[in-house]
Length: 467
Image 1 (cartoon, rainbow, N blue to C red):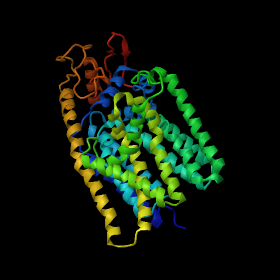
Image 2 (image 1 turned 60 degrees about the vertical axis):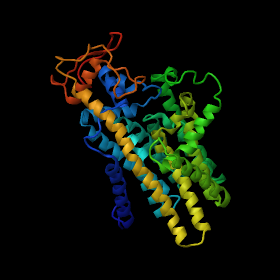
Image 3 (image 1 turned 30 degrees about the vertical axis):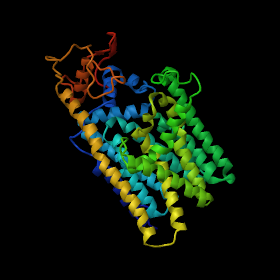
Image 4 (image 1 turned 90 degrees about the vertical axis):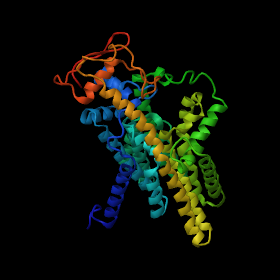
């Protein structure tokens, strides 16, 4: 008997996996063009200012993500200042994410439809925001583990197994400690059983709900033990002071429903007018087709896709609506919500194809729509490269101007560095920390030792050799 790896199906999936891994590398990897920017420097400053275990378990603003911190720490100590290698890892992780999404689409669509939707997702320009900033390995890990949990949930729906339940629990927990965007998104897993499985799967629904709740509780205990409630409110004053109003609902509507459809036609959050029009029309058209002509399975899949996108924004919008509706269009969120949007689009296309008579127009329609979508992704890529490339040049100039010998430092050790390529409200960097970061990345000359970096109050923040 042929093994799964040597069977025709195994060869096909292996080839498709390589294609998905290669796609983000070809589209987004620009060795030598980018360098540490924004939140990269926040993580680096914490690495040189705290012992390893304190760095690992401390919150990043309102987010607690020890797994991503550990992965980033290992990557930094492996590749140092070779930022292109870090971004190659991100691109490969993006390819893996797209391949896992494709495997899920195969459970609901024809093979060609699943492949086209999966490849579009893997080449969507919104992924630039994760693939060209090393820090965002956290979001990639979060989404990868979420999709692994979703694939295991789909498998569990068709074949009960305690091993599958354990796998779901583990993947949910790993997703939550990678980045906290999926805090409420993980509840889409039991809803997948409840909505698509029907009344006959009540036991499976309760079982998946229980393991998700267990992982959720474990994460919550860790969050409040090491981050605390003050972390949750660190960027969001009065987050639970009262009932949110219309601004919250508007933020939720844009983030969960409209934003991903805009990203289908333009891959940058500065959309042209036609992207608003086409995105809004695609949303209304898809929902209308599913509601009017979809069968029971298609309607259930459409309902679940809406829940998939809506759930995380019940919390994300609560934490961000005070900063304005623009926060709803963050591309790192769109990488997640594009999944639900493409499921709705693929479902609508299947219904339309079934309803219309075969002909040249029916065959050309998806190709025209796909061409417009692909053009919107390709044409928006230079905007990302201009944005990240400009900050990277400033970052590299600043970094190379730091003298690790300490003979010609530009400012006093405790003096603050003016913000160049990071958010001043997210990072307060001192000259001493900046020089220690240069030592960390470049390699400290004196046997791996680095000097103690002190915080603004003059207290010792970390000492000794590299962890």
